[in-house]
Length: 421
Image (cartoon, rainbow, N blue to C red; front, side):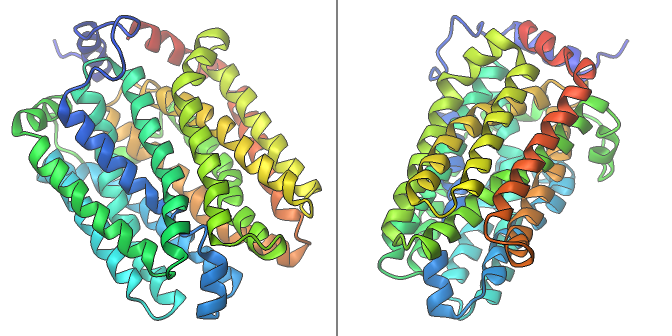
């Protein structure tokens, strides 16, 4: 009699230390290597935020062209997520991680050598491909190699994401003060360090541990689409796509507003988004698990998304008030940190399929929202007024809450699965 993947996951979880008895930081060195590389990989998400006004002035770029830096990056990531499982099953986990790092370093360095924004847009697409290779594999590898179970491993991953997102704008601001090319070269150099960490600190036996949890059957490019037949996974994916409209409206449009309307310089923009990212990382670790235990995953997720929508609405109403916009940007990081941990944990437990396939399917939908939002945020400002992108972003986030809440009876099992881990 064959055992289902979820049964295997539950059996494996029973052999791991209980969440309450093991520290999240009690990890093998291979886990720390992947976590450190994840921090650097996610720097690329917010790296260009502080230098957007500078690139507009020095390269003669329009706001719409600047948003394409995020659109090309996220669009390629979304599509590439569909093939990561297929390629990983042939390359192996360690080679997949290294291949992603090499691509990120290469296209980041080439971006620093570009002569115009549209050239960087195309190079960011290659950067997104490398990030897809790395991110899709990193989460599965980290969860599989961890000593402390799924929930704490996901929190550790979200901490790495939060630190990467927060350090990215800081690095962009500091190196951008020298030249807009500096941040791109800086990431390329850091990815060389990440390559060395994975190459030397992730031994073959760790890769073998991961491989043991990977699908034994032949991987197909259609697997992520088949995975979306599971209603719970599909609902989380659609919800993530909708709330990512709000996420990237904040990340991109708020940076343009603070730079152009409120005249924050490259350093100041970097510090604002550093505060946002640090709060995101803090809540991912310290408050999200408590909210999950007290309110349950679905209710906590809906509350955090509604609070995020309120911050976007406040930015829309008080767009001309610099203090309000800065405060709401930083405060939103806390709500996003909570939600990111909650929804990532839920996705890993949403359906009785391999976690790598679930992650690929979910990420495909999620990054579609990330690809569309930056471009249309600026378009909304052109079509209506400069308040509109924040209001519309908030509307998409509220719609995500409605989708989750209307399907809550199909999602309640995620708390039951997590309690078994």
